[in-house]
Length: 253
Image 1 (cartoon, rainbow, N blue to C red):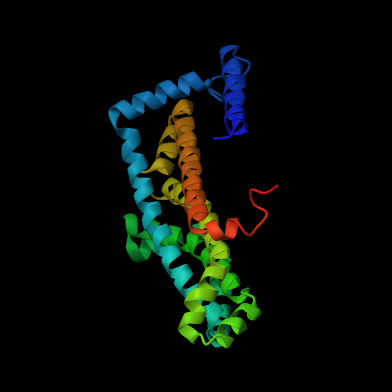
Image 2 (image 1 turned 60 degrees about the vertical axis):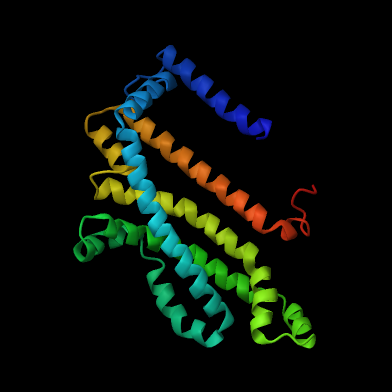
């Protein structure tokens, strides 16, 4: 980890603790980090925190996984087939601007208050960045690379596997990374509105009794999970795209 990645959080929490210790701000509105850590320890010892984390991660994992699978598969087909894109693009552009949370009442009506409705909302939030980036990646492959492969005798299947797919991977993986953040945003919203467990529910429950430290525990856990998920996505991206990193400016300037 780079030094700058450590210094900025330490400085922030140091100033925050000082403000709390000196009571420059009412602790009801901004509790000190040590008070938040004490609350986090209490929630962890009781097991409540891990229950909420596990429920939220399950919902996010299911919804994001479905969004990634459908987005990449459909995006490749639409990027490869102009006719299919012409048929599906109007439908996609009608659905894409609808807020995932606006669909929540309908999803509850269809799938109930259980995990099904929440997974569908996260699926919708995750789908379109992956789908659009995949389409752009496939359509953005240099035609000269395809023509060169065809000149060397490659059949359509070989052109796709050895030219189109590798060339579009950087854009596809970027879409997958963008969707991780949107999945986290969606799970918080849906759990705050219609759930009895999960980190979003934890925030609402704390807000009802003015338990500010508990609210901050939920917020910091969400931030930490989002950060870790993004770091894992970066590691996977760097491992998959070693060849791409060596042919770009990344790491050279």
